[in-house]
Amino acid sequence: MTTEFTELGASLLPRNTSIPSYLSNPDRFLKLAQQADYVHEVWWFMASVIGALAVFHYCSVFLQACSSGESEPSLSSSTGTTSGEPLSTTIRSGKISLRRLPAAINSTIRIVLFRWTVPIGTNAVASVSELIFIFGYIGALLIWEFVHTKDLETYLWEDRAAHLASCQIPLVIALAGKNNIIGLLTGRATSEDGVVKCASSSRRKDIGITTLGSWHGSIFIICGFIHAREPGCLRFLRIIFLNRIWLGSHRTQASVELLSPDTVRLTLRRKMSWKPGQHIYLNMPGISAFPGELHPFTISSIPTTNGEEGSKLVFIIKARDGLTRRLRDYATKNSDPVNVFVDGPYGCPPDFNTSSTAILFAGGSGITFILPLLADIIRRAKERRTVTKRVLWVWTVRDAGHVEWIQTVLADVCSKLPDNITVDAQIYVTGLPGSHSSFPKRSDLDAHTPSTVSTEEKDSTAFDSNSSFPCYQVKEGRPNIKALLEEAIDLSEDSVAVGVAGPPQLAQTVRKSLRFSSPAGPSAVLKGGPLVTLHTETFGTSVIKSCRV
Image (cartoon, rainbow, N blue to C red; front, side, top):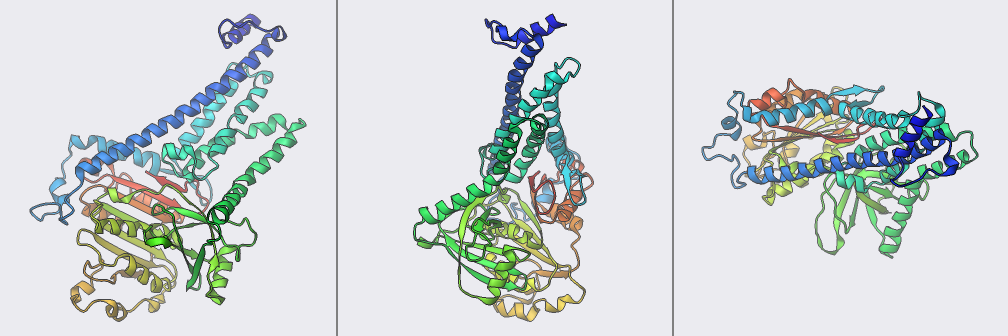
């Protein structure tokens, strides 16, 4: 047996390399040789996984660009057909077509891997793809840890566990930044990188087992504590550099406006660009509890190029605890602007302008994510740079008082709506019965509507293309998500993109409504139904924070 392990250890050394005299013990020689070789193999494994994800991402982007260019309809027509018949009725014959088999397989993969979830806590779920990745990654590391350990002899794997765990630290650090190279290659948002970070960091716990009794274990714990606080410290130093040194004496000031008893609108101007749905970190010296207090907020506006002042950034902030509550208290008592330090933008939001139909759901403060998406789609429709023809915009909110300020925001977003797009906005109030008394009255809406608009157009549930003020539906209770999805998908002429922003329960309801028995299922796709993609932005304790499937 000793000769066997000596030969095995010698095979791990480079060619024409003799065995040193201090490694005359075969087990010691095998142990050191395996530690060095298996760490290299783990890194090749990690590089292969990241490379595969990068190739998949850029191939998807390329194919999506090609399909968008080939299937882009004529933007001068609202129907896309010369006969005036909707395109959906001309394509869907109700018969199974084998030409649609690749799309049906794609739909099946999306449903099984991303829309099937497993509860992992009281208010948390994980998709099948996440669980496969995490357990597969940990399983691969366990194989490298215990392979060739001579019947699991502790002497051979105890140090190897520490080496394999410590080699994960560079990967965890690489994923610590909001804008990191791995996210750029794979096209994944930071929250999605957290799945990789979770899998890699779980193996770091072995370090504590192998170094707990050694003197340098305390050093590692101290360094680990510094590393845990390092991203916040580095972000604060970066904010000081960007806002104090780079801009010099030109400080950024933001106006504060109280929209409702628990909602604040923060508005500032800055020369920067961002994508709809991205977020930035804000520090307000006059309101923050300490200099390094930073909070992420989604930008509720879209970038513009208005002279030297830069683009207007609007943040709709719901007051809870801490900074947001202090900001609400400040807006209640003061009308003076506040100094703001900005860091960002961050995030990898999807582009909904490549689908024929966009369906946007939001719950509560999730409106800050879907509002700029709606504004971006409408702006591109005005510029004839989108294939999106129909938008279903649904917001679920608890207090009816929010309807009063959202109507002004929607009026600005949907002003002069072009004729090549239809927008259907629905607001659901889930508060106590009778709260509809605070809804805006129809007479109030008519006062903002031009007199040239007919009564039928004023009563429309969609935005009128000739009106400067949007008409929308306000209903009590919770929306029937499944019915809304089925109707919108049936009316779609081509691909459908669904976006969800809000609590995990809302995202889970949408996932369940887009499984096999829905119009997004493989059987419906085989019969000519559209392919549906889903993007979720959830807050809470859910494992998934951002995912496009």
